[in-house]
Image (cartoon, rainbow, N blue to C red; front, side, top):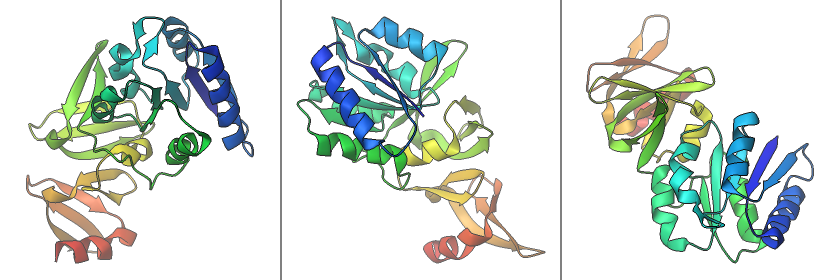
Length: 232
């Protein structure tokens, strides 16, 4: 597991590195510390991390300016910053957690626990998913998403207007971020529950979800009863 810390204050960077190493004491981890935004971006280009711990004020550089790029990437981002006024926007863009400075071990461990425990979601609701297209980052409003289909290490966002966008995060990582209205109905599908019209039983004891748009998505056998009860 690769962990990247972008923090320009050496004392805080060492503290983050020590606490993170303690949290992952029973796992093989490689923790890299960068003291500037540019060094961090170069490191991400050469070796994308599994999780990034990012300060927002880096020697005058604003980490928030590249936050959209970070949350559009394949890894999770945890903000560690004294700029608590940025927390709401950070969550809206899709960070996993926002740890305010000064922080203690319990608060950092809580954020890292969210990274290793998919069932734990951020306290704030995500409002956007950032996607990359032709080198540009676009913010997709969560309300525009009908369903999400797994496509290997990527995902396909299927939108209300019939368009599709490719996201760099896996289905599992997006499930950690998305609000509870998004149901994992199948190993390859997340769908906005509000869009489900009814659950159908098909020949051969196979199940599917009929969306209000007319789209038909497969439903896993283990999910059928749960979904049926919710709709009733």
